[in-house]
Amino acid sequence: MSDDRGGFEDVRASLDGHPIRSLLAYALPYWPRLLAGVVTSFCTRFARLVPPIIVATAIDRIILQSGEPGLLANVGLVPAGEITGRAARVALLEQLVVLAVLAYLVRSATRFASRYLLQSTAQKVQRDLRNEAYDHIQHLSMDFFVSHQTGAMMSVLNSDINRLEQFLNTEFRQLIRVVATVGGIAVVLWTYSPKLALIALAPVPVIGLASALFLRWIEPRYKSIRETVARLNTRLENNLGGTAVIKTFDRYDFERERVADQSQRYHDEKVAALRVRRAFFASLRLTTGVVFVLVLYVGGTDSIVGAPEALSAGAFALFFLYLRRLYSPMRRVGRSANKYQLAVSSAERVFGLLGREPTVTDPENPHTPETVAGDVTFDDVTFGYGDREPVLEGVSLDVPAGATVGLAGPTGAGKSTLLKLLPRFHDVDSGSVRVDGTDVRAYGLGALRDEIAVVEQNPYLFSGTVAENIAYGDREVLTAEWDDEADDSDDARGRIVEAARAAEAHEFISELPEGYDTLIGERGVKLSGGQRQRLAIARALLNDPSIIVFDEATSDVDTETEELIQESLDRLIEDRTAFVIAHRLSTIRTADRIVVMEDGELVESGSHEELLARDGEYAALWRAQGGADAAVRSAED
Image (cartoon, rainbow, N blue to C red; front, top):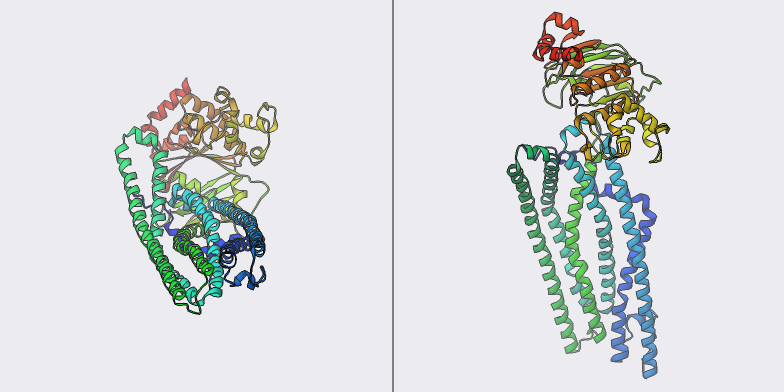
């Protein structure tokens, strides 16, 4: 078996435009918060540039008394004249202290505001994006779920969207940091010494170019890493979900090797990318080291020879304080380039998914009848999954409202596939499926599916209580609020209990530790197969549908329970159209009509007696089951 199937490599074809632009579009509704966050973030960065200027002023005018007015004097924040005498020096020091306090107060307040505003906006974008992605996945057609695995979907909804939130939260602030810090430092350094400023800032375009080249080189690597981790997640989820099968067949070694192989592939790709990243960051450190040495040599030489452009002691110290500040955001450019590419890879998957359109959709003017009688017609239906050979070919079947139709035939004959066309889980390739004379493709999906209930061979139950799982069959009951102590007379609870009684489930539910409030575990793991099926039948009956599909719905119950369920079903489907798929032919022998399918075609049709008298495929199946176990031992005598 391959781990390469079921991923999300194909969704990028649905991407429209650059994925980061699509991500930023989700932030636009919060532009007032973003704008305030950006402004306060710039204020934070500019406030951080003030203390080194204060230190330079203190060195020149208070300690050395050089007479240099300095930047603060030039902008009118401190006196420009010569400072002489102890009192004047103390007064200047007090002014510098006040400025420092104000700078730190501004920095603290704006830092809080900017981080809160930007981070909370990133959280809102994450919430909106995850909600829309989840809702979009739910509305995709069943063919999407057939070809994409759950682990890959979870990777998109969790890992990818979380990564986009981290990108907005962290790297957007880092972009502001780089622009504000480098821009502010460039202005200040140029004010003191254009020559040394050019030396200090010369690596900036080099780093920008190197980052662009790094992005181009690393892009395919990170795409591969994301696809590899999605496959690893899928493998882990499959194995954890299939623990019972692994134990049954003692396949620990086989599965350990498969997981180890995927883990090794992820390790190798991650280490290769890590090697390049470390080399890139090391080159940035070397570049900033060269700048430090050049500023020290050139600036020091100017001071020694007494050049006119030589810096004062305070200004020289300022340069090195700023070089240290410049080093961090310059180095961060490379790391941000790395994060950016990871975000692009995740955004491609997320927005590629959002660009994927369902193949089964509502028509422009959907047919939404007030009631559905339940007449069903399959007219020359042909259908196949994707590019594979057709599963159904030329199937025609007329079912009047209220009739019960049993479907028999070997596994793979197309019985389940045929009935999946009824609620439009898939659309026919040719022919048509009609309900009450109207093509199902003309119905609104909600209106159609509200009238069709499906009970599968292996029904899916949600992690929750018994009552919650049955309530899922009716929107009003599901959303009703009831007290945990409510008795069966409660309207919502009463309907749940009524449905459970009809499905012969009330008795076993009453024996559970907490009755209808018993937690049944993930997928109903705490219940037996027969109990899960009876809950699924109760859930379907609560929906009060016009059409019911039972797909091997009694396959996992014993004969006695099957009889009890069958008696209830006979009463419940009296005024409904019912389709019953069964390998155990005793289940459908009383159906109004039985159709036999083989290789995607309808080969026989008639009542139980008619088909036995015809001595064809149905009769052969009946004999193979021992006269359906002697008609279930003559209905248990």
